[in-house]
Image (cartoon, rainbow, N blue to C red; front, side, top):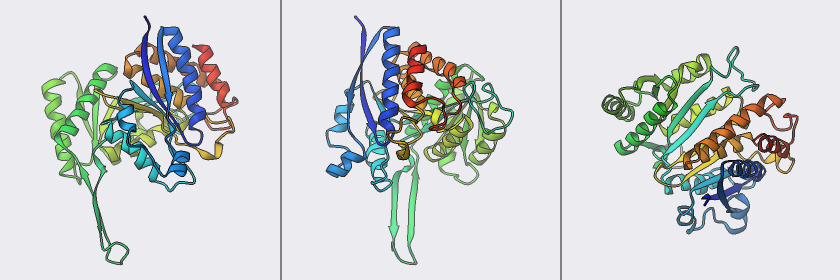
Amino acid sequence: MKKSYKIAVIPGDGTGPEVINEGIKVLKAVSRKFGFKLDFENYDFGGERYKKTGETLPESAVKELKKFDAIYLGAIGHPDVKPGILEKGILLNLRFSLDQYINLRPVKLYPGVWTPIKDKEPEDIDFVVVRENTEGLYVGTGGYLKKGTEDEVAVQESVNTRKGVERCLRYAFEVTRKRDKDKKLTLCGKTNVLTYAFDLWERAFHEIGEKDYKDIQRDYAHVDATCMWMVKNPEWFDVIVTDNMFGDIITDLGAMIQGGMGIAAGGNINPEGVSMFEPIGGSAPKYTGKNVINPLAAICAGGMMLEVIGEENAGKAIEKTVMSITPKLKSLSAGKMGYSTTQVGDLVSSAL
């Protein structure tokens, strides 16, 4: 009997449905090849639903989604909806409610893909960022005093718990060990200024490493230095672990050095629960319906999803196939690939 997985699909807004369609095409092809079954169920969460109903997520959504093996997300963001409403109401709500406490972002330059960094090749840009995903500044603790006056005060606090920091660090150590590349884990922080939060991070980092991960080399870099070295010497990095805000920033820099948003995939991971996988490039509404958007990030996100739910060989096969396709594209940019969205999906699924 074939193993079966239930996947909740949130195509979302803009070009989200287009790239998710190609991702599902590839997932179906790889599931046939490796002998397992994927059952997809669609949910219409996004801008259009919000415009009609005024609701981002229904009360039943989180409870329903907990029954799935994974969530496959296209993009959230609608030009007719004020920024922040959908992002907080859907994306952050799901991350926090499903306790997806890891944001996992591979930063990898594929063959034939242009990088803005001179003289760097695929072997130079191949690292992973593990970002804490449910604490820090994104908790939203704080408030206003005298809002709207010349004496206004706005306070937003970064919340870091030992439990939250430790589980993120342990996940990062495990990723480093499993990659078995340089076996080096770099803590990215700001210990010279954020002396409370990153004192906790640094102490936990060394305590855990010394006790349980003596085979992993521990390294530290301030976030500003990390940004410089990601550009100058990306080959120095194997795995980077950091907090929510710094992770949000350096992963976008990572997307650029790996060739752009069109190839960047990410996972919001709960290792003990339901995880969500997505291309990180956004909904790109100006390209909606034109069949020109690059679906490779969504396809790679599907491969990440398979690896996390237990079909590691199938997930790696998707990545390997994408790496065989990228040299054939003129560019990763929308409308400049030399192929349409659906044709790129066909290329990958056929090559599988």
